[in-house]
Length: 197
Image (cartoon, rainbow, N blue to C red; front, side, top):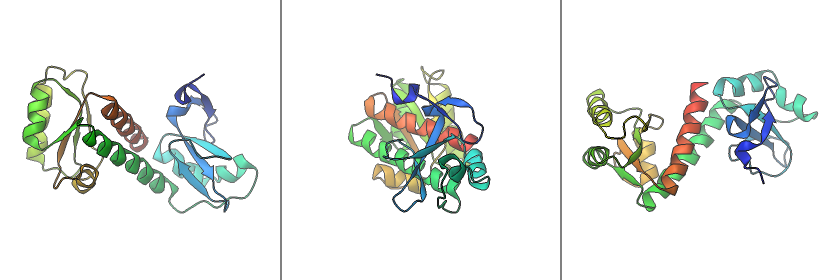
């Protein structure tokens, strides 16, 4: 059986065939409104759009949802922002699960120690981190034994990271290898790609 990510779908904007992991699905609700189905699990009809906020905004502007579905649908205002919010929610949920699994450490001291011993899969820095703190932690990351394979994400504010981890004033967090942390990293990568395009 093919994995969801291996299934090809057509982007309603560009008409290109892409892997599902490179697209966002939008589902039609019972009230005929379009909603981001970022995990592609909602039942019923749906439309696929390339994983990028500019493509989602273009789909909204060009009214591709009604055209693709061949029926009138309600499209919420600023669908691109709503999609970003859903992707952020999935990431924060995954970070919370990684923390519960013992696969997420927070705080500059603990993160630096984890970086030094090479156990970090990905480093997360708050988007509103102070420049000096960011510079120090990135210096520690560059010196890590596994620096070449480690990912770095700046996607969430300190407030969002704090809520996700159940800690106060979280500026830096490190995902330690494990199933929950790999899931969180996939969610972070998906959000990063969405914001970049």
